[in-house]
Amino acid sequence: MIRRAVVPVLLAAAALTSAAGCAGGGTAVEPGEPIPAADRRSPAAVAGETLDGGRFDLTEHEGKVVVVNFWASWCGPCRAEAPALEATYQENKDAGVEFLGVDISDTRDGAKAFVRKFGSTYPSLFDPEGKITQAFSSVNPSALPTTLILDREGRVAVQFPGLVNKSRLDPALAKIVAEK
Image (tube, rainbow, N blue to C red; front, side):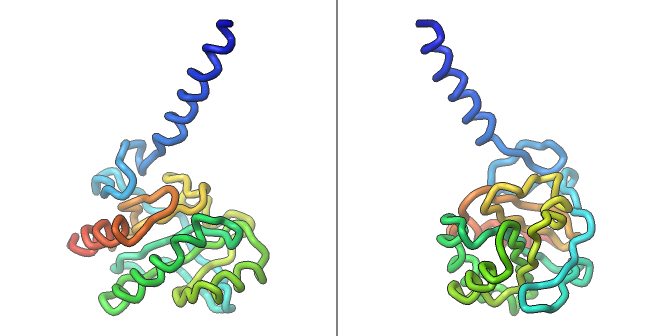
């Protein structure tokens, strides 16, 4: 009898722990809210081959706000948020905001098919070995999808674990773009 009462309590505690998430520097921040500037962390080197065979190096985008989205073609929430990400990219690219996709768990053909199907025009890195994901280990973007907004200094300023939509992404992006 006691065992039956303990299991739901343990499951509830595990759910709360996993939902709490982490932000840079261990500072608890609500998803989509800016991380305080003093607590923001820069990723390690982020560079690699894009799905279309080009090169992307995050250091070449210093001084710009960059949105980084971790995805996989088989991920339902990734598929659901792809149109919103592309729309936000199109609306902000002329203002100097860059977007980068990071496909972390796919075949190259599966990743390319996803990009074609959803009309994603911003670059995506192919990262089946997890090197790019590891570069962002201070915010643990291994859950799919995860979207990060990097400030002009290349530090993680906002994190969205899970599906993000325009009504959440656009205001958060505007806050970081407004920072000088």
